[in-house]
Length: 77
Image 1 (cartoon, rainbow, N blue to C red):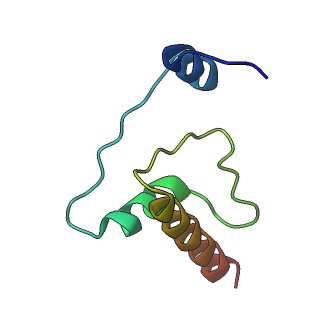
Image 2 (image 1 turned 45 degrees about the horizontal axis):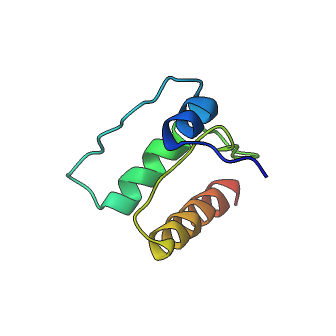
């Protein structure tokens, strides 16, 4: 098992190029997050493996995953 300091972990994951994103306040946060994460995706496999998304709770993470899955299912239908 390898242990990292927090700053080492984030620089390892992101290559040192952290990006902070501010989402539109004119729509629900979950919808804005899905819209941003999906971006220009046209269908097929949605690969988000290069992203680290930090949410405040386990429930927030579950809701985000559910919203992403629902969006992908609608697009691929």
